[in-house]
Image (tube, rainbow, N blue to C red; front, side):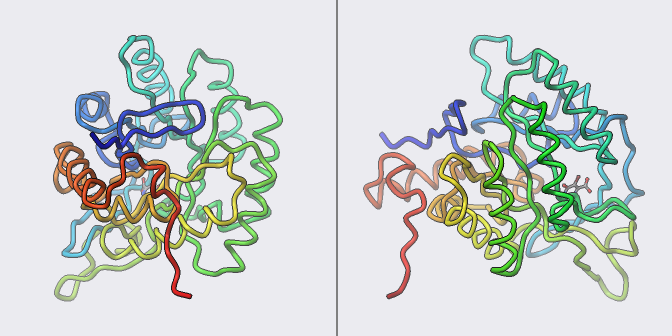
Length: 311
Ligand code: RRO
């Protein structure tokens, strides 16, 4: 029997597939549906200090090759998600979870993380350094100096397992610079990638989403090669203690297989989950298992990171 079980830090998961932050994770009801599905875990919608309504609708659109969104960080406020996952983790058969967080300012981020540090929450935290859609707020992780400063301050008080959600990088020099910064800190994981920021999709003569005159984060088929490159670039550069979560363009077992081949320890599903609902996890798990059987792999360790190059 092949196994798609995995671990991130000291946390084990029966299955390596889960939702990507932002998709099917805004409310307790949605999170409960993921919990009840074949997914190995869930991550919550990124929570801010106060609840937010986000950008005006329409703010998400499916396209033939994926999706575009400019949600603008709508969420119930981080306490809502913190309380829910803390409650869930008391159940003996509960999965392990990820709490996604970020403040609207550095000060807010530290206020949130200090609250989590002092709370009973014991699972994983994902600090979102890559939201592309809040007007006037650049993606934090494209500013290396600020990223270094935030991580330095965070790790002066935060001792729980923490990872970061990254935007895609597009230049080898940026992979090198970013990895050198991340390697200075006791990160448990990096998650590559968030949506490809500020794309534009047009139907007839008009944009398909309202905020920012149609500019929004791109997901789905469009982004898989960029996601795989980021997963593999960081797999090659990061200390082995920093694991990689692969996100971007996963809608089949083959896509998940490729992320793992590039070095991912866990694989997240965004656009395909939005389009197909939580049944997507069972389908893709079965497809991944079938590939593993065909290739004679029994565990993810048998092929994780073992991407072949052409000599
Ligand atoms: O809410 C959003 O607009 C959003 C966020 Br926070 C994010 O991290 N990535 C994304 O594509 N959309």
